[in-house]
Length: 282
Image (cartoon, rainbow, N blue to C red):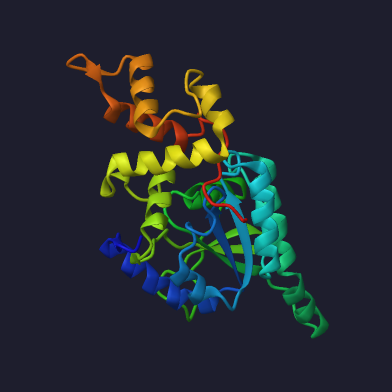
């Protein structure tokens, strides 16, 4: 499908320009990707802007993704030259693991300074990621845990803010932004499924049918655990008629399949239909 989906509020354009200006001030990039849709959740524009920097890819929401597929994605990104970890940002141990990995990226810089007789400087990192991939959660966890200090750096943009995470790690904040358009409608659909763009910009029935058929093909066991009455032979229409009937979603005596689809999509997004990865390495 090639219909372009445009989703680029004005503040995101401004944010992208800021990132282009700030990238020269950092040593590395922490790129947050949704573990369920690692490629679809990558902002290709930001990736190109930051591609010459050391990179730590963090596969977030790994608690909602298929663990075996997440391991395959980690191997995939490592093969492309990035350090990779997957994380549940609500776990303090995973936050600590992110800090350790960023500090490890800065070891070469520190050793170089020491070899020249200079005082080692903390690695300066920038977090990038699209909305709803966990960027704000990670920044808040890092700042709260380490009593964030904000500094004005001479010679930089006015009120340049840096969060001191540790003696070896400083964080430069950036807002979450999407690409200005998505030429592949499938990519937009994956972003809608996981909550990074408003699902309302795509027809509910189209999104529900795509999602249901995918889960039926790769995670039918998950479907049966949530909806014990579903059978593999059930068509998309039959399945949602059953769901509506079972849950009492009726309108004028008829099954309200539209409501059933909305509920299904919400439960799928929130992990109530089990751990599902919507993109596959293979």
